[in-house]
Image 1 (cartoon, rainbow, N blue to C red):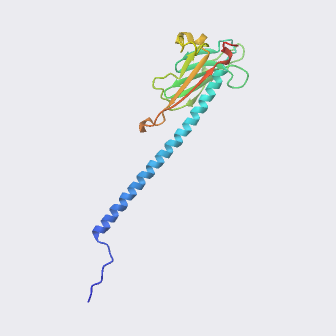
Image 2: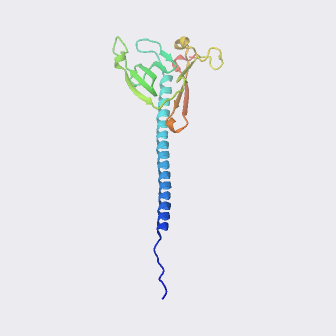
Image 3: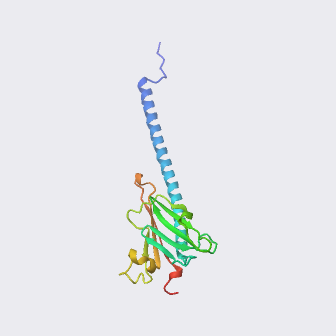
Length: 204
């Protein structure tokens, strides 16, 4: 009488199958984690780029429109490497506001102080501050660089030294270096723009 063949799996076959399944599951899970991390980073990067580009565009437009303050003060109040203060109508009320762009930690912030009624003043306590760009890492590079009206022909006196910026600045170069995920080795993004101050142009 012949013996019937067993259709079951041996213990070794079961263990091999379980190991193979666990290995495939781990590979799939690892790929899924990598994919979602990459997707999240790309989404955050695109979002930050859009915000930074919008902020830079607004800043360039406002600097271009710098003008005398309502109390007669010169259009530029302060011109430092990482802080620029000027007067322009950014609230669209036909009055010159005091506008201050400055680096605070890893954020570019904007402060706006509206003028009071006569006698006109710009109380610092009234300054409204908001964050324009985050995740900045300038790596020692200044946000603002200043040039006189003879630039680029004049390479001797440009960029302007701190002491000559207030009265001689006619052109402002702006650079933003955004480092979203330095911990994963992502490359920093560099944005830049330049603008001539319309009210101070030499050929007016």
